[in-house]
Amino acid sequence: MFLAIIVLFLITITMAAFTTWFSTKTSYDLTKLDGYSKNDDLQTAHKYFDKGTIAYWIGLPIVIVLLILLLIFGIEFLVAPGGSAILIPLLLGVMGLALYGGIYAFLGTIKITKSGAKSDDAGSYNNVLKNAIITASLSLGMIISVLIIVILKLSSKSQ
Image (cartoon, rainbow, N blue to C red; front, side):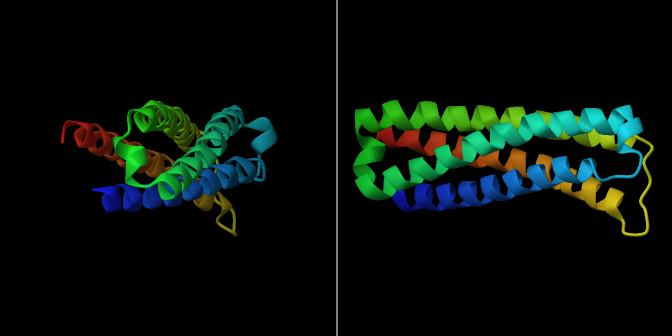
């Protein structure tokens, strides 16, 4: 079970890193679209992605620190009462941040599609929309991954 949790942490860190990157890129690229300064939907999408990006930048280091603690303290960190007192609240916090960022990514994606913006020759609108969808999807994956870790951790108590 310890190995499964380590693997899930590595998957979660990978998803968190990519989600953070895609959200940051989407937020930045939105401002480069033609007509951004006059399009309220694109500006609102940018605000949504900014909020989500902040949540991802907060959650990513938390997951990394938790993995480091697991690697340093090993299985004892999972089964010791003190480990639970640290691990579960921080994992739930990361899940909350992923949910917060995911909701804003989803809302931002809807705003991008409603903006009426069109792709230029470079396809920048299509890239922004693709990155927005990837961000929202990875957020969902992070939530599921963290939820599985929490379930595994709670089930290790009962054994």
